[in-house]
Image (cartoon, rainbow, N blue to C red; front, side):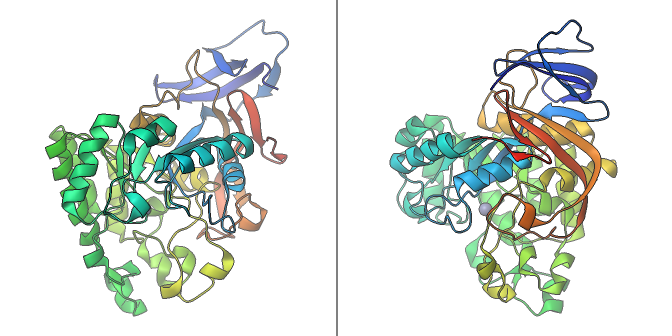
Length: 433
Ligand SMILES: [Zn+2]
């Protein structure tokens, strides 16, 4: 039931208004009805004592793989939605590389129908830019937008044909949706599985060079400039890509960008033990790249933190490094992992929360990610000092592939409300549907 909830005395972090301080938040009938320094005389409300805790807008994830339809053994909309709720996410974008690919309004309809029935959080479908992610024939963008697509992406694949990429960007302007790019030049990646450099040499594994990303980011920025389209660069991982995005923004090109928790906190050194749970695309990079990604987030060149939540079954990941599929879980560890940047003084709490919520919502042009009177009550309650050990087997995802498995983390999501409904409470689990 969406009753009246009074979140009392927490540190309220609202990036949209810049509020960072002790305040009360009142939720009623699914909406935020008051954010005040101190409310008084509220009757019939469930009081949540938030003293010492953070109250923030629900997180908005621009990049996740929910695997439904077609790969429900890895994840489905119900399990992915539950993991998202436990991670403090109230809305998640799901990428189109399902089976069938989300390149047709019937698939978008299916995803949204499953989400309404199965997911405790809002699901925002990202449709494919080209049919079957093959990079050859464009999808019908206006029909996909009419069905509910919030953006277009061939994520997992890169549109190698520059002429096709130009047309995709041109058409995206007509439907006013961003094109999210997985920027990796496949002719440079070839069979590379780890960052090309000292670590790949030490491991004796084929390297995936930073320039594979940089070349495509540079190309796509030029095409965005030519077409006037909104380019969104997914999972930036290199200093070179950050520099290109920063320079393009300064020139007025319509570009936004995201970075993943793993590219912000892990280097390629993490792969030295050949653990397939440290294999991603793009790969973990060197420490200068990680520093550049953090600096890009801090100075606003990179808008958002997006998980790239990518579940894979145990039997797929427990193979030799070169054979394992790339990708790691992200929802349930994201907040704790990136909170490290606040502890190190590299981001303020408001910047961190902004990159997880308001900034991400703005990339999509959605009215989410804020604690404003009248806004839907998508809210998270966070304990920034709670320590816990992450065990994927105790989590909500169907998969286990995480580089943080067994690690002690600091910072925990205590509760998540979507439209005023308590969907997750730490200790009690996911409560709806
Ligand atoms: Zn990708």
